[in-house]
Image (tube, rainbow, N blue to C red):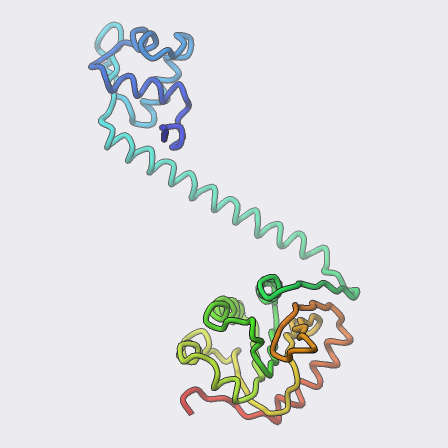
Length: 269
């Protein structure tokens, strides 16, 4: 059963308030007896309920009399207080998170070579989105096909969302694809890249016919490669994520050559 503890009250405060709803003005000792709240705790409980705006105290009577505030007003006050506390907690977590990012980043990133893999389209997509989400300077996408397991309608929006977030962070995003691949993209995606933040100078799409595979290049040092089934060209097995600055530099040099020779893509043309 849902109880007032879910909104921040203690079990004794819950018991006392519920009991008071069935009574008129009541003294502390009478309430303790009726609610099974220990007499040694009842005044602390009533003080807390009064501070929260759940009870009113009649101070001129001896002994003091207490009356429960109507449930609608009481719950509204509890929800408002709890919401404020949660917002403050969220803000605190964000501050702590930002400080930790700064502290951990100051320790320096791994400069050595590193390789990891993800098997299956779902895990591969999750790994790719993770790497895009932490890019600071650059995201380069080169792709000649969509694999048969890659559902553009289902997975495409997540990728666009992450690319949009990267652009808004100031990351330069470049996409090099065959024109036939652009033609295969649903119209809704084309409509989206005609709007902000994709209209930013940091985002560009070019087309070429000189592509034979797919990879993502991240921040000049990291690469993500699709692993394609050798017996079924448009079937994806997984993703390889490689951190290798020298290898990335070599591929980036090749990419720049093709990029300069490619045709700028203009939606609607």
